[in-house]
Image 1 (tube, rainbow, N blue to C red):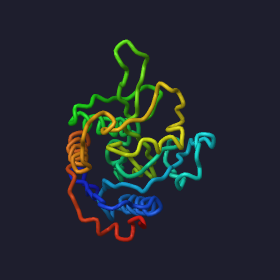
Image 2 (cartoon, rainbow, N blue to C red):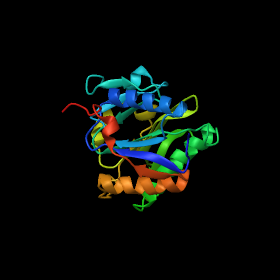
Image 3 (cartoon, one colour):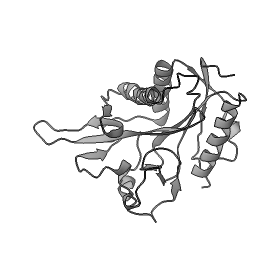
Image 4 (cartoon, rainbow, N blue to C red):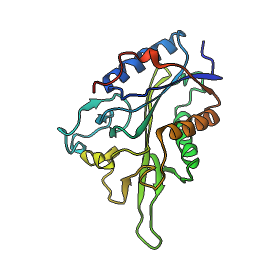
Length: 236
């Protein structure tokens, strides 16, 4: 019953616990595979936490007692999630969308890049470095590039789980508890829209992401109430 012209879109207004998010993604992906639910894009924020991908190295978790640490089950290494960061989980039928994993990941990258362009941020991908990056090199100075968005996905029988995270205005110091994505080179850091001097509300970021998603994926996001997420909010 996959209808590629429209995708359900949910925006959670309160932080969502990671365990609850994983459970909901698994259930929704299963329903999509079985033709019982439409594709879903879910915008949310998490309370502060670290997640480990399937390639995570123990030595890259520098401060294991700082925040809860979760085994994400997605590709990639360690990353941070927390307030001020827009997480977008995508449960999409990649099988019906061309059955091309590389093209799917490239679409996720293009989605972020186009959304950032709405705020006059020139961003791009870099060979050998996952995610979306901005050039912070000063004229005549050494190379400096910062990651502004992360990508980590998993496919189960051609339905995607996990997705992207865009740094709108998170506490960047929280990234120091890990080696983000395993990259220790001092030339490469982490930034946010706020760090680039862009004052952007989460609602404004959402609108840019919505427009870019519809352009890149060719599907309209249809806002639905988040009643289906009842019980998924993180405790305060």
